[in-house]
Length: 141
Image 1: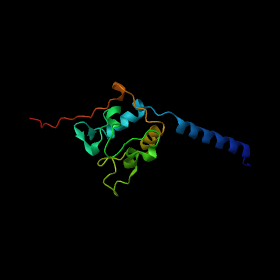
Image 2: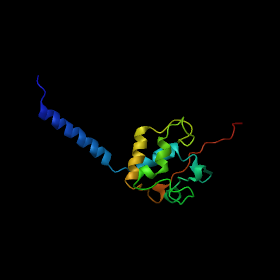
Image 3: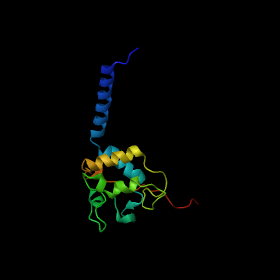
Image 4: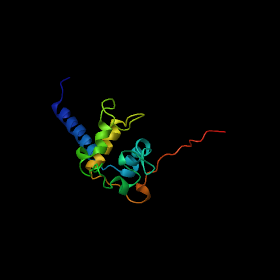
């Protein structure tokens, strides 16, 4: 059976078009970004545990002016230290985040990159609030 160049070209365009559509999809903070920050970041970066002078509890605090400069630069993931620390090799630097436990999966880091590049929309109100997961540190009696 001979290869069909028209079929091959059509398949290429369909696959390429699907990839572009996925890459261009609007990233939703509430359903996609908030769960990542909740599970991997907020336990260290909140008002009671202000590591790196970064508080991710809400938009106002996450984008507050810092002496070190902005952590999230809307529209520019390349200039956003948040993305940089998520992509650093963990064994090469102490700045790689998260510092302990499992690294954030590449797909999720890709969502954060796309979210930042799309303007880092972070809603006000309860949808934009992230609270640390708390566990009881009291010993059982």
